[in-house]
Length: 501
Image (cartoon, one colour):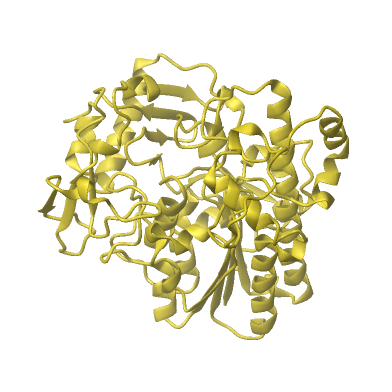
């Protein structure tokens, strides 16, 4: 038995033809839907990048207990469990967050791994002289991160040099080298189509009319939206969507190469294929760019998800089961390879959902540490905001006090840290409890930024008409409380949300 997991970052469901988009160039995603079960109710869990990957390793939500960070000493790891059971696990990736302090120990859980550099200002190419950024959109000229990105791009002018291309090429090499072997699991993971939306002319040529008009109008080089409200004119928003679509066309081509090799080597008979993403991305919807700072609207939270299971051989079918890939992919792989999941895992194996659309869960929680705690039943989405302007009480529970790119600073730890009894999933370990209120914006009533909201996403998929329905809200709060208890949420999270007791 074999498995291939293809993971994209920031892949937008609403931009794919298999989910109703009629203007983007993505024939291989359409082809994928013809060969797999396509899930229509797939949602994120912990956000954003590394929290989602901790979910995937541990098969349980982590956003209620801590922010971005490494795997904890008490965490289970699906790739490590597969490796221990005799399944060769391999990671081919250009996701550079694995190699920062906040992702320091994920890749080491695989038996082998490869890493290709250059994404999003990765501190890769050392160059003192600044790159030419005269025609770059002015908002990014002063950014050190953007400066490094433009330095890196000078070394990736050709498609074969780019990190996504190298990631997929290495993955294909692994498949070809091991096609006759058994008991392996390959994860091909690309940072794309995460911003910046850097792509070559051949992919932009799918939208040649737009780019001709953009150049003729004197439009700047701009493919990296800020994490902020939209204050650009409509033509800039349109341009950014084409930049995203061009990079997605590259992702589509690389996906096609995986489908091609599965056809060529007749792997469909004995190889599971899973294609998923950690979250979507806002491209001007709700007048928002990016993610994390705004409510997790459907464009971010409602994700594409595709599974081919050679046991049931269901192809070209749609599935309505409510799933969360970041916690369900792990148990699905464990079940497929005959490895028992641990008692701490709350995600579910999806073999039944693929085979006959068996129900998986009644409700799903998702969110960001210190942000909304959201819950959906597939029809309604409820976004519960903090009860107090302080957004407290709020703590990080960790034995690995590390942010994205650096350990916690002394002033975050000094006088704000205590050792406390752990949770049901910490395997008898105590944890540090670190007051996280200092991570919240000062002088701001966060209730204005994170209002409690309720939407009917079947009738209002763009979430432009918030509901005021006490009965529905009461039912969604019941879902929320039940799901929070199921993952042993810290008691103060209920207080923070104003639902204590």
